Length: 180
Image (cartoon, rainbow, N blue to C red; front, side, top):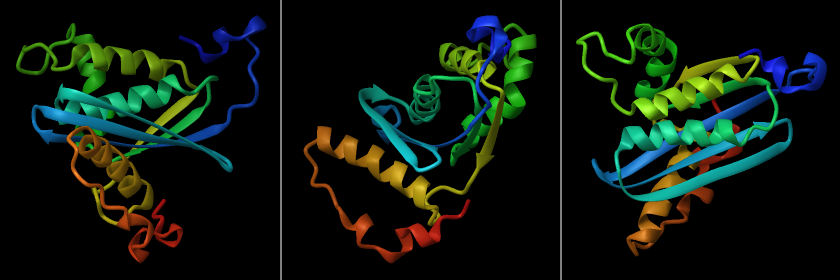
């Protein structure tokens, strides 16, 4: 779908770049899970997160990206940073093949989490450009660590486990360590 079709006469404002940072977490796999997504546009930041009592890590990783996209109101350039090879490789390498193979893998098996992949594909098509960047997880990337903390804290909150608030005090998580 052409991103301009959402606006009268095909006009849309100059594309802006939104940065999306995501992470999913699971306590057991399957088990209790949560996701977090941080959207940034210029000086604005929005955090989206939620909990699921029974899910998988891959579902939470995908859901984080989907919920991030669903929160973006207009077509724009989107830069996604994730520590999930499943999400990054799925969106950039496997998705075109799955679609052309009627949502079957190379082994002719149904694609796992097909509904989520189809939703993600729809959302990607709404934007001017979408780029996925893989980073090593929990490796002092400020926003990856922040998303991980939000997601794991949500799980702990629902399991009545005490939450460690040390991330704000730890110098490795200061704004100076952002590796973008």
